[in-house]
Image (cartoon, rainbow, N blue to C red; front, side, top):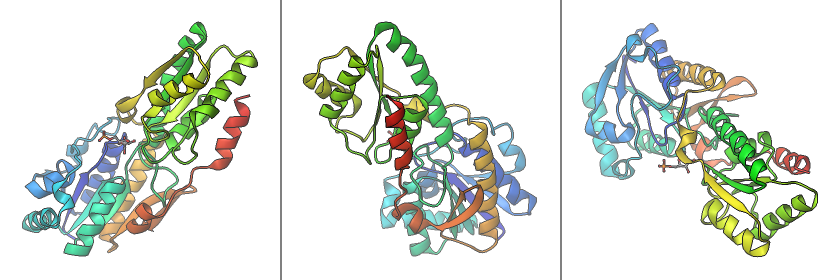
Length: 322
Ligand code: F6P
């Protein structure tokens, strides 16, 4: 291959820049031209291409967000949008793609391969950690640590006022962030989409925590754990058992910021491995890290197979919340 395109798509994640840097520098070192595609699939359709060199990715390993920008493109979900994108890629002489993103990004890549035979490999960049075929996605560790820092601060005020705090973290369909943040933050309750929990149970934990002499409690709620999120769950729990409660929605704070060392190293390894895999002739696979080793998983499996949360960690967190 003589020319490869690289892009970031879907929700941004800390470490995407480090992955981009690794892909660009690996390819440049192996004398392959690299084109950055701006704004994900939206920029692919519009032909927003920029030539990348090792210098274009200088001083970004520590930066959150993505210098290529990102988008959730509706047009690319249509066959016409994908045809236009393929036309633009061919016009530019791009022979293969490195796609950095989450499940929506990979679903788009699968279609592009099927309909237009454009070789593509995926790099898992999403704070959600919800992709099968990698123990961790790029950005997850940073998001967990950012949320944890917030919870530690909230604990101070929760203890001072003897209040119950409901803290909503990201994760519409997956509870990986909530589970890790809840475990590391010593939460009394961790509400996940994977383990349904209702206001009665939450109210009962709060009541029994009070009876045990706890002055304050931390309830970590994943966005998708209860319809309406943490606020609705808290109001419903108060109807069952009245308490002094407050809600904090951490929101997009979790998506920004400088990536942790873990995310920078993971991104560097996977970004370079993706370049090598594509140049080596593979397509339709995601690069991941499983038990410390680089692993290849078909993109279809990465998005279709279900990655389970660790139920042992969930149970242990419950026991330790005594
Ligand atoms: O997929 C990453 C993520 O941050 C999810 O955790 C969250 O549910 C969603 O994106 C929010 O999307 P948006 O930034 O488009 O509102």
